[in-house]
Amino acid sequence: MTNTPPLTTDSKIYLAGHTGLVGSAIMRKLRSEGYTNIITRTFEELDLTDQRATRGFFERERPEYVFLAAAKVGGIHANNTYPADFIYINLMIECNVIKAAHEFGVKKLLFLGSSCIYPKMAPQPIKEEYLLSGYLEETNEAYALAKISGLKMCQYFNKQYGTNFISVMPTNLYGPNDNFDLNTSHVLPALIRKFHEAKINNIPYVEIWGTGTPRREFLYVDDLADACLFLMKNYSGNDFFNIGTGEDITIKELAEMISEVVGYKGELKFDTSKSDGTPRKLLDVSRIHKAGWSHKTELLNGLRRTCEWFSKSYL
Image 1 (spheres, one colour):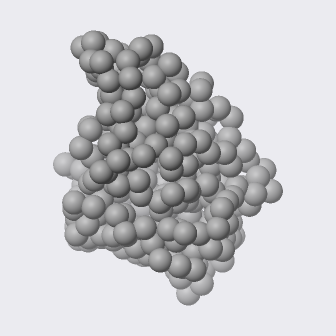
Image 2: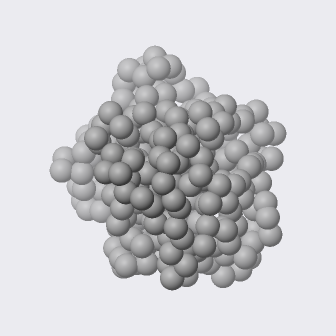
């Protein structure tokens, strides 16, 4: 692997996916740390599934560092309904960006994956070495396969070409600029919207998909951005990193916490006809802790910030 010059505040950085949940958090982090030479493109300006367009962009701009946060994302319903879209779009983005990054001399690339890459019944907490040790969760298999491919592409390019491409696998994320669409969002933003609307409209109960028993881990997205910049500055190698809190709660406990933060006084009803997904998904974060990083935002504080942002932005 090549020796990469240190990242400086005037390094030329391409942030792919800067308008999304993760990308906007990385942008906030970079700007707060004084980075000024940041390149972005909207989907309308650059379709990363288009190989020729992506290659032309890298040839013209020659970024030194890349944060690859662009992706097609969604919750259980969206993943299960549009699997062809999820695998095709994500694979194309990864293949085009990683190949162009190598071809045009990017010094370092950080790829954003997902904890759904791990087997459905992986031992808990989930260590990085459990990858490819069992069957995936069926409802998001297409997305998981795409993210596994991106992670492996980074490792294989490092092995064959000596590139410095690293990967992180975050747990469930939440925060400003999340997707709050009830048909395509993840569980936490969907619950925030449901409770806000139920409070405003005096709805007597809020319906929650599933039994409420699955356990999930949640990381405030600005903490992920902090971890990404930390690794971009401090790590070079072929390991990948789980990024999370190392703590989880049940969906029922999450719903009760959001209800309290929002100030909703009604009832919670669970629709057990809806899929629960993976029973538990807690990441082992000992590798990133040993590297020198740990999360800063506890769940209750992160929920308060996110609910406040939602109420100002959506209602």
